[in-house]
Length: 178
Image 1 (tube, rainbow, N blue to C red):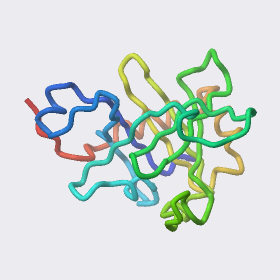
Image 2: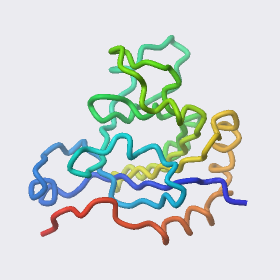
Image 3: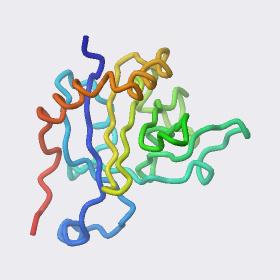
Image 4: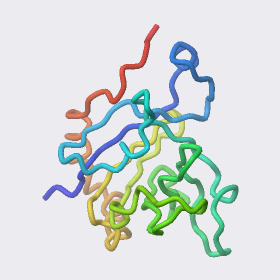
């Protein structure tokens, strides 16, 4: 049974590619590959007018107002809105995280939350810190099962499905290349 609805790969692009495409931040994670056959993946909500899709990895304590029991380490945001916090349940598995979209009807500035239709989805993240890559796996309506899905990810139960999605993934944006 396939659980994953959509796959997105984000990575820090090489300095030369960033310069050629008009941005400089070495902290920016650009979407380079995707496979979203159902069109349900919420990430296009964050797509810029020029077609680029990117996030910044921000320490959660800088942007999330939460009590001391908060487990989130980082937040993925685009400067206007956050996609999700990244929750790492096991310190020895710092490459696997989960998250979900904000379920509030309004953002902190009062605007309607465009991610509301996706508030029940689970986001599983595979982080390759040395390569500066984060892969996001979206499971439609998976939020109620998010901890079980996370444990399946830890146990390698998604390895085959993830491998297949990577083979099917296509470039998200035509970056200028050297």
